[in-house]
Length: 509
Image (cartoon, rainbow, N blue to C red; front, side, top):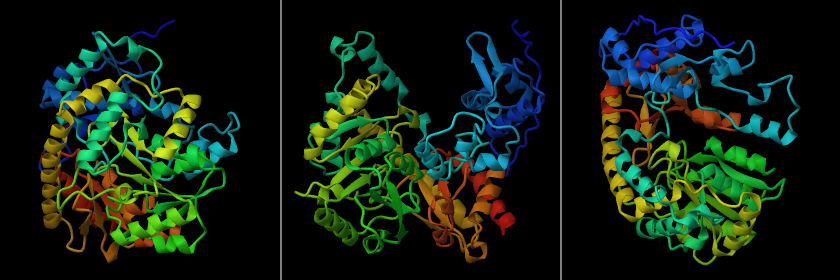
């Protein structure tokens, strides 16, 4: 028997207004979510229309729509075409173990999700234990200071839609047949042209493999080059998303310190030998430092002398605000061919596109083609011809130029506000490029960056602690700071967000 669907009910919201209040869409999202969790909005309850709730709350309809969209994306409500929005029968919290707490949510332990369920493989447990800090939960994805999130609101979806319609209203029959294991040739040619013109990389399209992003690119590199037990040098602190592919390959991640010149090659060479090094030389994540030329050359000498490999993650080099773009490490590797280069469109276009690429040395292209054909045949084709045309017709370059200007203004605004509102001892780093800054904490807050981040999240800010990205516990004391993403935060939201951050620093201190 189906449940009786309730009529739309009135909802009383208590919204704060003023310069220090969070944005209205965040307040609406948080209050509706809490009403669902408390049972005040039961399953199958129909929510008021966005227009009606906007009138009752004294705000714009777009504000309510933003809150509804986030609730739907996280699974709290369901939008039924022509019928309105309803509270979901199964909530995200229903999928967690009984007795789960908000504290557990902020540091999830996935291998405990089903303690009485099937026994997981040891490799799966090792991956789940080793993936490190996850994205904090309980806040909307668009909360201020979210890291690594581009602003999709400025993406030219009208152009993208026209290109998609051009291809898929009457698709080429060849696109409907078995694809190329490396990806659509037209897209690989467009990427090769782009890398040659913008990144000074001379690569053949046959060296390029389309992936779903940087993690899948590293996964293929591991499948091709690593045996179980092989050691891999990784940056510490570093990108947590690289740990799972390494652990899945049975590799042994070996964390190496990062200082003002980037990856500490001398420290790596003094330790156990490695088969591969995975890093972001142009802009290290999360610190934002650049690998010095001396260390780049030293790393290449190691790879040539020891039959080693280097995976270079060039995740957001398009957004540089000072000085000339830096040449990739791969461009220095003439003749030896020891560098595999990773690029991603998720930071440049919009996160949900899930497209990236892996550039391999010529000698690895055919083995990787055969390996991919054996495992997954070819990557999905739906978005590839659209992106190829988007790049070939100049829309990609125009979008990057437009967003670089927008992000530069947002970064400048954030820096000015931090200079006025935060203690003088707070030092901002990573200013030359990228989509986030690092706020180094003063000595009075030594060892407290995780507490400050927790206080900031309680105020509606998606702030992450720098020390959460450290694998070695002894390095956390030297890596105290906060990651402040600015790309997806409008300048109009920054004043209250910085004031809230200042309050969090005071509370944690």
